[in-house]
Amino acid sequence: MTHPAFRFGPALLFCPADRPDRFAKAAGRADAVILDLEDAVAEDAKHAARIALLTTTIDPERVIVRVNPADSPHHEADLAALAETPYRTVMLAKCEGTADLVGLVDYEVIALCETARGVLAAAEVADLPNVSALMWGAEDLVASLGGSSSRFGDGRYRDVARHARSQVRLATAANGIAAIDAVHLDIGDLDGLRAEVDDAAALGFAATACIHPSQVAVVREGYRPDPERLAWALAVLEAAATEAGVFTFRGEMVDAPVLRQAEALVRRAG
Image (cartoon, rainbow, N blue to C red; front, side, top):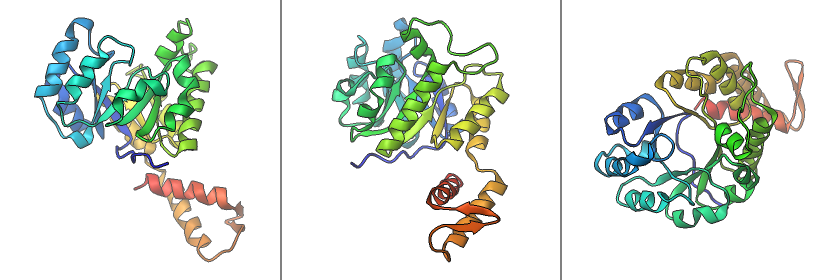
């Protein structure tokens, strides 16, 4: 099945849709901006946010619009406003199954799996032809479990959050689409963000969502391959061109999975 190609860079920056004064600035600082009609906008500001979406236009190739969940009273109005804009990439909040995407067949969709139902439905959602990526979210997930904290005191995710992250990553890989890692809520904890981005890049995530411009540089750097590792990847691929089957390179065995990892590093380097 052919899915839309995920065309955005690794740093995606959320911006409240009721703050049109920030739209262009956010788009300029990140690889793409997520104009958020959902959690970043108070209930009494939803209408104003949709008006801002209609009246403040930026490059649609670098815009994702997060709409309210399919069962939200705001969902229909969000889609009506969206239809009047040039924006055609939608992030569906709290996606819980394929039925939630019925009204989005004309859009490229990034489905946000951030509830228990959504995580369990990740594989089915990832199989839909207009879905280009899945993202996961820890805080709404834990809330859907009746819990109160996604992390331990030292900042590590609790096991259920790690499981959800893995489930989403496996679903995307199985269907040949992109995976987006969750936001790091502690804005000042750049070291913690760096560790999570390094791990995401190593596992083949395509991007990490940001909630503050200060996080963008850390995300971009984390997805950029280490120069030594990239040099190894280029060298081993060059060696493979003259080898047949499994071979030894610098004292280590190289087989098909190792070559695919080298190819992934080169792709990340652009």
